[in-house]
Length: 209
Image (cartoon, rainbow, N blue to C red; front, side, top):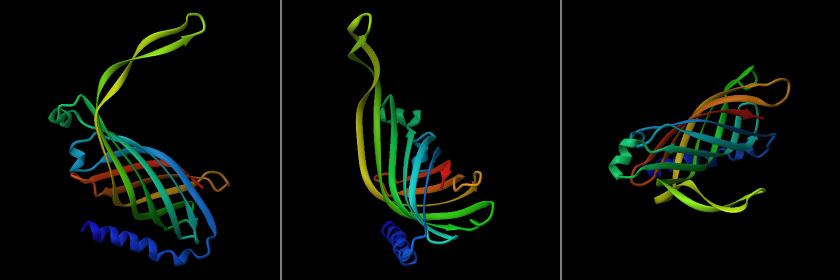
């Protein structure tokens, strides 16, 4: 099923290439918001946050193609930390995806759109504990002096690259008379990580142009 899903996502992107032989308008976006993990990995994680950006083209009023970047960070919940006997931990996930976009009502005051595709992701699981480190600081009056400061000591870290698929819906509306629009979007990301697959739903707000 994993290979079939990746194949279908790749095929949908490749099939749309001829339609973009004549690009008419470059577009992009930046945003951020809340990320919710979905089971089975959701039972191990807290809600987190995301930042995202993308660039691409609109061939016409209804069809576009984007190269998107997403970064998510979620803390590991206390129940799972107790199981692995770690004081603290987090999961960081970033990825690049190629996503066709279908604009349903772009010519109206509100643009509803649907998007989805696939790409490559990287997930890092990291366990930490509070610690104290020493460093040398400078003060104009006292000069250089040693001091201790709090830090996080990494107990263990594991990262992996995997393919994944994504899909979502959103809407945007124009700000003033220019091309800048405010948008809100919810997207589902499924990443084929070992040993537990990663399912995340980032809800993002930001600006498009």
